[in-house]
Length: 324
Image (cartoon, rainbow, N blue to C red):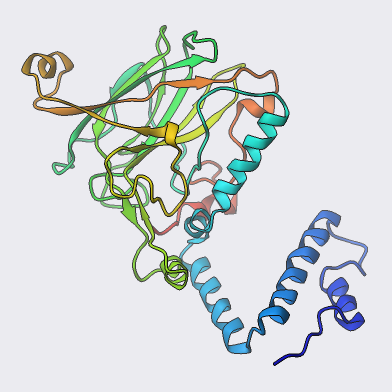
């Protein structure tokens, strides 16, 4: 079909009506955004001669994504999370907020309310016998190198099979999730296990979309962080563990060179005993630098639906049903 109708007065008037510009109520910003979004899609249908069969097939995929609460999984796979990070990086640079540890994507699997520990403690419940023991430690400093005592370091990661507690009902509550308050020297340390990477469920709508693009849905072994302290810019980041086959081929585009961390295998008997482990373990060190800011809204994480963060919010409740 070679017909092109997008630029006709009839379609442009129709687009105005669809977007609610002929109505007094509603949000002007919402109308403008929907007008742009629907208009771009109308033009796409024209330009690529999208058939009714193709359109309704896409609707079926969208329905399946919603039913499985997988939009939060597909969004990073299509680069939206990383693009938002790129915009925030650009905003920081324009405002002169330079330095500090780089941000990267949050992902959809944070759960609010993890147990809080002072300085050091343990994250795993000891039941994952396939997991390699890990000592995760580091120091939180400002951009001048001064330690930040009392910083809040929220950490979460997968088990040895790639599953996350809460979303994986076989795990205990808040397994591999902790909030650590840094000590007087700005240090934090937790005993845990080396996480595994994971892949999108092979029969999921997310993977169906990726298959159409000829792409895989694999993530490397990684560890998520929220780090905050009064007077400093909140940091959302994660580290990828060096040596994973997908470290530099992450379907979610979260890898940054500065955030690839190599673990050190500890096999010396004296060092094992001094650290309180029963056998060899891997030490992973991740030091963090926070940029100073007086702006209150920059000192807290941005709002988005997160599991258990706001039980009164329907979107936050739905965030707890994500399928990975």
